[in-house]
Image (cartoon, rainbow, N blue to C red; front, side, top):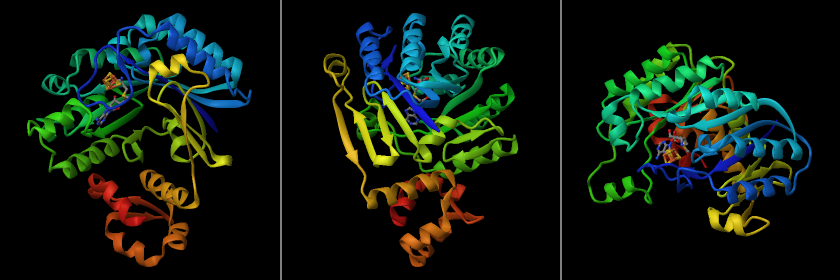
Length: 355
Ligand SMILES: C[S@@+](CC[C@H](N)C(=O)[O-])C[C@H]1O[C@@H](n2cnc3c(N)ncnc32)[C@H](O)[C@@H]1O
Ligand code: SF4
């Protein structure tokens, strides 16, 4: 399986928690589209590609003509087998006119940034859509036959467990195929990071309860967790994200996008600068060849996220004693290791002790 990621670094407004590379603008610059098409043509190998993911930023901001040209460039450069073509969308863009068009160019999966259905919560997160718009977006996507995924953020300032339960149950009731539910991460360089330093918001101490609730509600409703933050009804897992977690081949286009070439053990990332991306060719990149140690650590980190870390391999590489030290945090079954739900809130600390 090979995947392509296209980063669209534009947002109408910038959310106070978000650390993804993007600029504030209600329209996608033509110069960026031209630079993107140029990058797609560069190093094109004509080989098969099974998944495409338009991420952001806000890919749903692309004009119809812009995304058509990008898709054409992808088809010229690769043999795109249209297994899964995903577009990340903000709720206000998930309207019939766009959905009809996206379907016509081969997009078959939509990932919608819902975050919460609570009006208070949307305000706390600095979002500008309404709970009704969130619901409408999901119903629209489903009615146009898209595999529909919703993103939630939980444990944001002021959110009670009950609010989160309501968000989860609403998604279940609407019938989404896939849920990505992330604990709010507070990044230093964001407005929330500033608020944290000033003591206006606090790190939450009740995270464990949110993780446990998420697991209970979603698994009892037929969803299966196949990664730390991702749940799907049977058959609706994101194949594209699977490629990342399984350390498969993927190529990222656009500023800040990363690529991985497993045969060469090479990871590289376009620099997060739109102006340089537009001006310079080939795009400025940082190369990051992996050594044995890094590769071993990545296998632990990614394996634990998906519950697919091979027990035998881990013991061979790190020893029985190391495993015993962290055994209480781990869920070991059928020769594979994952993390127990009760310890997901300290995932990074557990990984640090394992490597
Ligand atoms: C890169 S965003 C793109 C989605 C789209 N622009 C939107 O906001 O609707 C993908 C998802 O990452 C999640 N996310 C972004 N920043 C986060 C943070 N600081 N903590 C937890 N989740 C975050 C949100 O759920 C968001 O929908
Ligand atoms: S959460 Fe989405 S809309 Fe908000 S700044 Fe990040 S990418 Fe843009």
